[in-house]
Length: 502
Ligand code: AMP
Image (cartoon, rainbow, N blue to C red; front, side, top):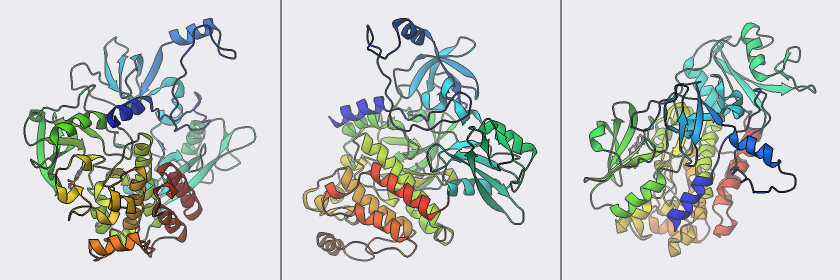
């Protein structure tokens, strides 16, 4: 049942930002917007049948935002910036398109954008939903005078220009792009332009009050993972995987870096035999490859024909969030904005799972991974259901994540998105202590006793009162009283706007 409902909801999800055709941006829509079916005869206030016919006849044209190399037969390569006619978009993640030479094949739908909705996305300098903290890390890493990006401001519908300069010392300046009453865009009121791209062009030639002219924007930015390695592909041939160094090992066995068909970086989890109910998991993996979000580690597929089973996922270069926090305690501890941004990213990934009625069951910093540009993603969602080890699955077991479990899980093993919310509160605590063990050296039995008595974790030193208030809400005894991830995300974004400048 879970599988079917999750699939249906995934198929309905649409997560595109909405921009006007001119590049002058009118607003965003990150919620699902299912298309309205056209009824025969029409209803009052809807377009006439002729107009409808026109709409239906007009081909949907998309533009490639990233290059894509077709490896599997039936797929089609994408050239960045080129246009494609959509022939079949009935599947959510892989669309059948035709290129200008008439070649037809499948492409990943998250690599293209409808031409009419393209807005700023065609520009190298536009980075969409990137936080101030991540923009700063990215520009500092590039270390080039005048390097800049334009990003969505945390206030919906507004944009911010982030600019790196070495004068008088290396730092990043952030400028809100404002609009006057005539709808023109400006950074300094003396220089107004009809659109954001015009404004960027103007400041390429004139600093016009900025710390530097706009000179360049970061290149070689990572391309997003695809939902599966090709259309309708979740079974991966192990002969096509070139295994490289070991990345770590965990509950299920060793994880190694790999290359699929010599070109795509992957992580390969080699499942220790006898650790999971394999057939059930393989069925579920088909659904999991269809879960796609910028803050979830993408499952590419499985090698299930031989033993051990391999789980093949997106490769995250900085490894587990827990180790990352511990390794970088000195620099991260002083950057509360970055810590909060990490929490918000995890919350966004979890809000996606919650929307799709998908329960994680083992959310913790050790089960999140860090990629380039400080991107944090949730990993291993749902895997706990397939573990065969009683010590891990039963709340009395030595490997059970007691310190992340709410009372209803400890008492009745009752998992829900709200038990994930409790665990998320503990994860926030891990982030703000840069990877300390919750409840220190207390034994599991002592932790259970505390949780039952309503004693919660103390406020970490680096954590603002406002952030701790959010953690406390996650630890409400009664699951119904805890906020949803959707609400948590909004609360954390507004706390972040209040505490850290945008
Ligand atoms: P796990 O079995 O998921 O606990 O993974 C064990 C360790 O392998 C983690 O702590 C990471 O350091 C590493 N690892 C797992 N998955 C990945 C991945 N997708 N990318 C990079 N490193 C990973």
